[in-house]
Image (cartoon, rainbow, N blue to C red; front, side, top):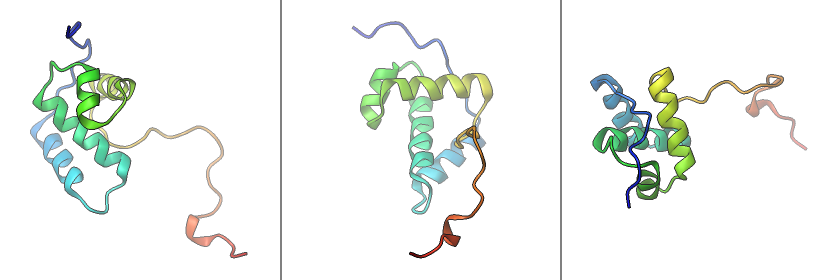
Length: 99
């Protein structure tokens, strides 16, 4: 049994889909962005698919699919993480002291 249709249905423009295709193919893109780009493309292909079905196809947890589906439907397209709380880094990773 499929279950109910997802309540959040993000809409992506052609430019956003092109950006997702570009990121999904890029060799040097951050892994998290590539996974989100592939999710965007899958949601565009099968907008009525359940979070569980899409997650299984992409190797993602259904809650991850649900989270990003809701975020894109309510806040718009972005492949970036939201800023995290806490103190900002005081040094860059390349400037660490050698022990």
